Length: 148
Image 1 (tube, rainbow, N blue to C red):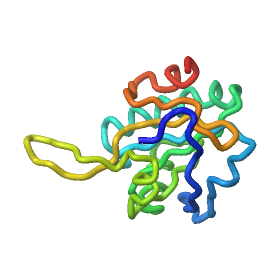
Image 2 (cartoon, one colour; image 1 turned 60 degrees about the vertical axis):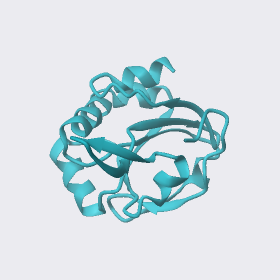
Image 3 (cartoon, rainbow, N blue to C red; image 1 turned 90 degrees about the vertical axis):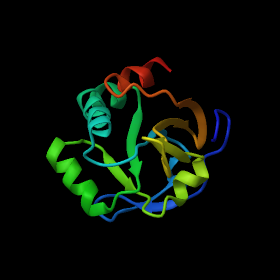
């Protein structure tokens, strides 16, 4: 997994509206990039809604927030509409970006092993990772970000 001090990998993807997003555009920005497993599941919904409810605090701190999962743009759109999320969700259907960040990992549920997204948030400034939050508290995630 990438760590504080690492450069953000160069990638291009698109958001829920099909707008192209490139990490190269983040050279002079503060970005919260949070990876999450799946739209509209309990933990992911709690995390997204906590970021929604505290979005003004993150914006006031200068952050642009992006969520990223392997879900499609259509699923992202439904998730955003259902919970009135004020930030963009990025598409990583082939999990290639998650692999670049080191968050495509082996997981286990009920003894069954499978590959999936680790819930990890990267705080990015000027194209570099300044903080990695790998023990995300879904009910209080915005506070974790602001404390960092």
